[in-house]
Length: 253
Image (cartoon, rainbow, N blue to C red; front, side):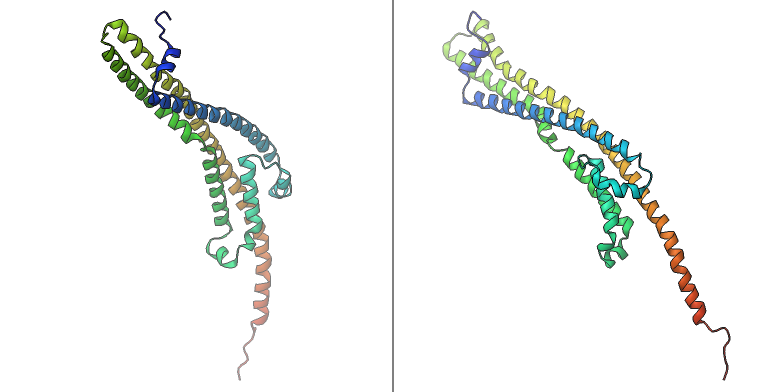
């Protein structure tokens, strides 16, 4: 520019406060873009692996087949991890102690395991969203603060120089507005990414919750079907022994 104004001139004449604001905006931008790119790649990979696991899961014919093949399935997604935890809880339900089983039951232990798995996954997928949300909400105000401080600094310089014409005021004030533009440039991608990640997490947890309900139904129905023949088998000896030990005739003396 002819009068030497512009972004380079703005960088050359800002003070320590303006430099601090600029560094803070740059830090928020780098952090938010790093999280946006890393979480986008992670979500794509997780969705692909989960779809592959669910496709193989629903091809299994029985829970016994799932128990045999669960160790061979890749433990690289939330769905397979939840299924493994549920299977291990069912297998180890006899090792948790008679008192705990008597007070809660195997179904209650399975419910706790599935609920804990859902809570852990919800906590995991929310990682980094706080920084993105903070960048989206705070960056415009940080930029506005830089603009206000730049205008204040520019007006002081203009007042000291004694030149208050429009061409002398418009340049420094326009340069100060660069801070607001930078704040918006940081905030807009962060807000859009936060909304996209929030929607994806809500859909992801909805699918995982539905899978947990299906898994609970499959395991509990299988356990009940296995306990019915055992209950019948155990009931017959008790009836038989009771019949043998009960005298048919009572002998009176």
